[in-house]
Structures are given as C-alpha cells and as structure tokens.
Length: 231
Image (tube, rainbow, N blue to C red; front, side):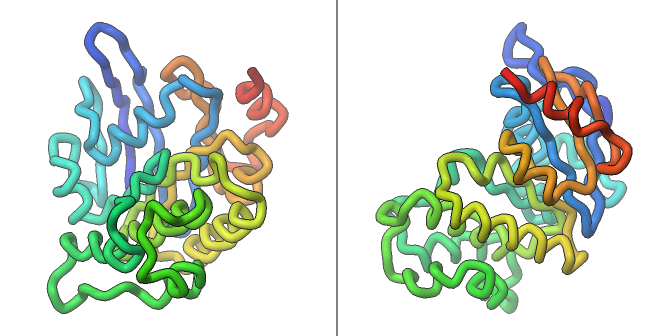
C-alpha cells in the first residue's frame, strides 16, 4: 500500500533522514521505534508531505506522491494523527471531526459510526470545545478526525504520549480493531515498547536518522529492539 524508498531529508545542512526504506501493508501495523531525536517524527512529516524530502520516493498504490502537497496526499488516502494531537481548541468536538469533510465528496460527508463505537466519549461531548477535553480525550478526537477521512494509510505519531493508562488501552483496542478490518495500513511511531509489541506486525527501529533494524515481528530479536530504545 505505502512504500518509502531510500528517503533522505535535510533541515538546512543537517541531514535528518538517511536512506530510509519502510513499507506499510493493508491490515498490518508497522511500528517505527527509537529514542527521542532519532528522526521518527521527521519520517512521519515527510510521508504526509509536511516536510519536503531531498531524495528518494514515497509511493502510494504504486503512485509516486513525493512531490504532492499534504492536502493532495490526504485526498489520496494518507491520514495523520500528529504528535501533540493538534486539535482545534476553540472548535467543538463535532466541528473538529467535521474538519475531515473537506477531503470527501459531499455525499460522503458524515462521521462514521465506527468513530463513536471506538471512542464513545466523543459522542457524549460533541458540543464541548476541544481545548476543554483531557489529553486522553483529545488524542481520541485526533484519531477520530483522521478516521473521518476514510484513509488508506493511517500515520500515528506517539499516540500514547502523556496519556493515562485507561485511555492507552482504549487506543490499543482501536488500533487492533482497525487492523482486523483490513481496510488500511497503519504506521505507528512509539516509545512505549510494551504497547508497540502487542500491536506490531513489523518493526522498523531508527537511530541517528537511519533504519538500523527492521523485519517482521517473529523475525526480529525484541531484546535488540529494546536495546535501541534504551537511553
């Protein structure tokens, strides 16, 4: 579904990503792991189009989308749950969810019932402003907003960061459900190894802007994965 081929990314003279190759398949979760500052968020931004790359390709369904704008990639099916959530604090929950409508034909502009089934709290708080929600509720809102666009690829950047344990479990169940539906590929950036290992079908471990360990879950030594995540 989505393939990153030999991607390079520079911020001025500094190289943030070095010959990155990652794949994401429908019905599977690819977990991108690593310590802080190794390039995980830069990778997500490059896939979504928020950062321009200096080499390599991003391929979606065999189409090279490397030079497309973020909105163009989103219309083709790449949805992002960014680090820090980035919900609109002055808009209501309902209005935040409906921001995803801009990518859809008018006849398809509805919030899927799946969003409320996965995160019932959102239905209870439709009239509440996004900025009044707890961190965990905002994270659920950010995921729900991405799902409104009916994505082919879902990029999730550290969805457990700063979230209470009960909501982490809800998010884990939601990711498992979405994988089982077999309608999208999921790339999950995480630092919480226990959360990642329960969900991962594939690992891609980063260090200093490069992939240093990659493979299917059963083929990768998880002790080695954890070593690369230890400060």
